[in-house]
Length: 425
Image (cartoon, rainbow, N blue to C red; front, side, top):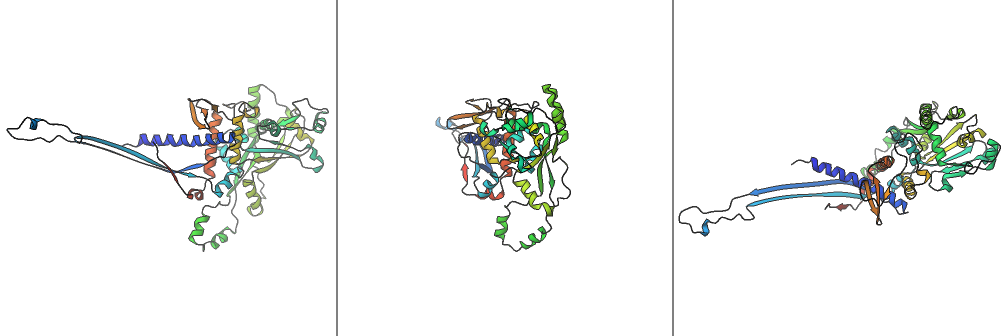
């Protein structure tokens, strides 16, 4: 019996279930409900087909009566049976290690891996950035400090610029609407400055061999429990500025929008520059810093602008040297962020700024649409649908969330009991 049709059916069914689970959690987040995470441990199925045919019994010989000449095909003469069944092992992910990973900020190594897969920089910046703070390096200029959150509310995603800043920059207060810095301004800044990411390997500490030798005497139970513990990072990642990406983004922006960018913007200097890791930072001296850099999700950048651009997000750096701190959010926080976007899909913060993008919204979910869905889910009598046509950024986001969930799941998370078995109808 061939299995190709059943294999394709199982593949499509599990794909739909995985995407539906992501959409359900986004819908739950939009309604301030707890999220729920499941994993399919295994899917087993079996099928049997049998058929039988036989002739009726009859009597051979002369002098037969009329009743003996009647032949009847009974139910047992022609029979056919087919049976198929399947079992799905579904498991809740609610262990301490799983939620510890789920609530931890996404590290820059993962960010680099997603960027190398071809995901748009703007999409990654919007999904993973929690906040950006601008702080002068000297305490005397703390009055210029500000922080902007990646949030849908105007109170958090925009920061009013104190009059002292506008007077210092332009000699007069700014017009209403131009006296604040919003998260979209930071997205625009990230695109045109070439903000990117990179990784490098970390040399293992010299005492790793001795520490591993000391653990050889542990019991089998201890070794088994420690096998699921997180390993020491073998690489570290960071944010950096890529001049080649910046030049390309600026040229594309001018070509599409027909707006000439200020010369001072093009001549701005950013640090760190991609590919310029400090040669003096060895594993022994930077072991703790490397670990923090890949797990804390916080990094400081610096920007130098010598002339006015008439764009506040750049001109604020002409007041003196400033430290730009970028904090990443956790996987759990990404779901909450998408839940907020679901409630405010028409908000400006949901609009894509990259003019070369094939989709102009971060999240696209239609409510009440019964057909034409890439994936659909029902929650509290509400129907949520990601349209089949368009919504490219939403589909890419689903892929990122699926991969993040797999990265946060360890073998220790797969030992939870009881197991819920669902039998397909």
